[in-house]
Length: 73
Picture (tube, rainbow, N blue to C red):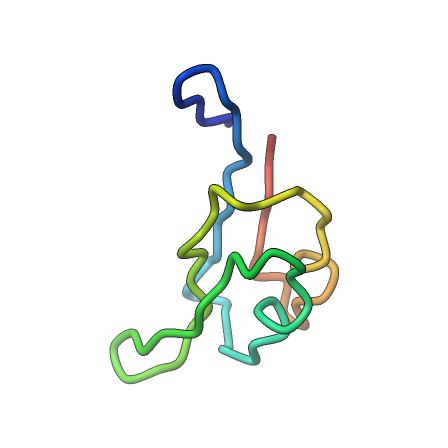
């Protein structure tokens, strides 16, 4: 799904919080700092807090050791 705001499209960045182990690889490899590690229900999880900055390089998808991230057009 592409989200469109005033004619600008951006990818849909999703972290499956049930799968995410909070390793932080996504935050480390993302060249545009899309991710923050946050505390959710007592566990560290990745959160795409700046998804609008995603350039679809897929470094996060390829780097996530548990496959918790999807990025779609």
